[in-house]
Length: 399
Image (cartoon, rainbow, N blue to C red; front, side):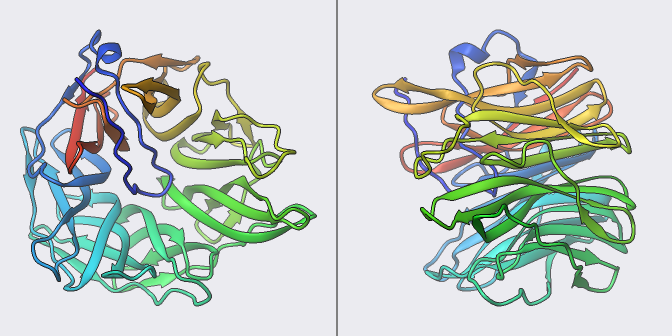
């Protein structure tokens, strides 16, 4: 089989993760499950509430010149995935990047939308009421830039949900649903080191122990004053039921960012991301490498990741001793094309190890969503790319 790398725009923090079929064939603990509408559909997130109730969301190209990209949502009923009715905004592209449900008749999905052929993005939120998805207005994003998006959401109930992302002012964004409307909740703007200027900051993922114990992580970007080089820093925020605050991470002195978070208890949370070489900054001391951090109730600290990784992109915990993550190893050349090789990681309570993971029929598979359940089950979702189109990808892990 010829292996090809097809570029694609994925959800914030997600990366193109290619699963080499020969390396993944040994352990069939992950099974590819048929998606309802795989043709040209990209899945950006998956969230499982119970073994018989899970959601996967993304977008697919609509029919007609004015359709644009349309939001897509499918639901797992314990036996199969079923497409659910979604709405479409004419002459707009819509993308769903995060999803969460508190019950069978209450789910939120968030993302962004833009006019056809326009670069400016606005926030997007959609709600499932047990019958259909409907778009719910979000506050007008702060001015000052072009790009505003909600990247993830945590749903606690019909009158309590949180969404995080970035505003048009390039600042981190948090919005709260109170049962009636979404509102912007102030979050602190991270400071940057002396000798640099603030460029932007984004909250990419959210995970909660309870409505009064919530974590959100992302990346702060700064511009060096002298050589104008771009550098990035990990960003973590915590909500205690009253206000959001920045919590110092373990490696804020290097060019790094956080792509995922999973909260287990008040003294147990994990965040993942990557450090990277900035080719425009000759002083950068970090080669491309995975970043795994752990919260012990007092501070974040670095935990050793398996050797040979350049990133960890998604993470989800079934329990304190059963956590899944997806990442990448350095590129290899297949058929003359440079290909990042995917790695699936597992935490057993003592150490992280590389495990065989999900794979599609074509190795050009991007995993952009992970969700684990206390039962030990887990879901991975994304897309498999061919030379001409994308197809939705879903895989299921059984313990």
